[in-house]
Amino acid sequence: MVVGAGIGGIQASLDLANSGFKVYLVEEEPTIGGRMAQLDKTFPTNDCSMCIISPKLVECGGHPNIENLTYSDLIDLKGEPGNFKASIRRRARSVDESLCTGCGECINQCLVGNRVYLDVKVVEPVLPEDERMAVNEILDKHKKSRSPLIPVLQDINSHFNYLPPPVLKYVAYKLNVSLAHILRVATFYAFFSLEPRGKHIISVCMGTACHVRGGERILEKLEDELGIKYGQTTEDKNFSLDMVRCIGCCALSPVIRVDERVYSRVRYNTVMDVVSKYG
Image (cartoon, rainbow, N blue to C red; front, side, top):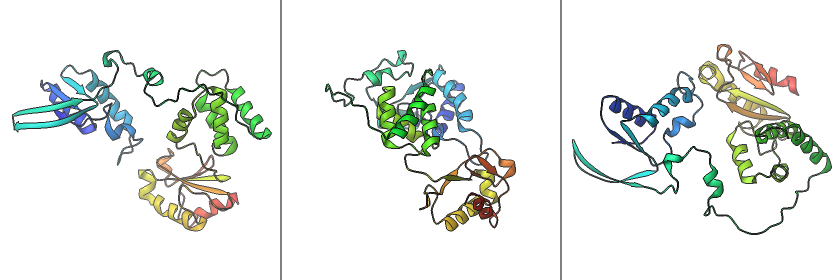
């Protein structure tokens, strides 16, 4: 038995299973993969984490010698090395796991999903005329798309420089999508912002290559000169400062990006020369 289905538990299970042992992989979360499945890059090689873990997830999920006991808790463990007896409690999923395809339809149809069963008339949110026209143009642009939500949010984010709450309510009404679902999408991707952002967005790369070549000092310099921390916006709404993990220019590190333009081999004493070009 292996307790914990992170990358370490998965690899240990595969090693044991490939050696001919029957393995019970116990995980308290509904899925295997742990934190690594949530990462973008891995240190220190900066490799894609999903590229590493995905083959292991597939092999672990279909290995004949591995039984995945997800959504389960280890209650008791008795015995001695070589002769243990474990008690495991499996939490109810209320679905047939053998038929699950991960479509999520069961969540939408769940009768105990804390819904309020009221016949409430949905009223179209009111927006200023110019904002309403701009959003309608964006919605018309993507109306033929099968899954328009993300493209619509991208265009709104570009137009307003953030996602205004009243606009999101209007989009939810027009697309007949719950506001909660839109917020889940909007808060998942770092590209989107729910707070007003500056006219120009400065992104400092803090990937491995940029970090070892002075990226941290460049970020500190920008914070001191602009009077803000990363994730904040200057009072005049001219600049927002962000920190990103990789821009994809490791050979040209350290790099920063202002709006859509990338500046390579930036130095501590010259970074403000770049910023001064944008007022």
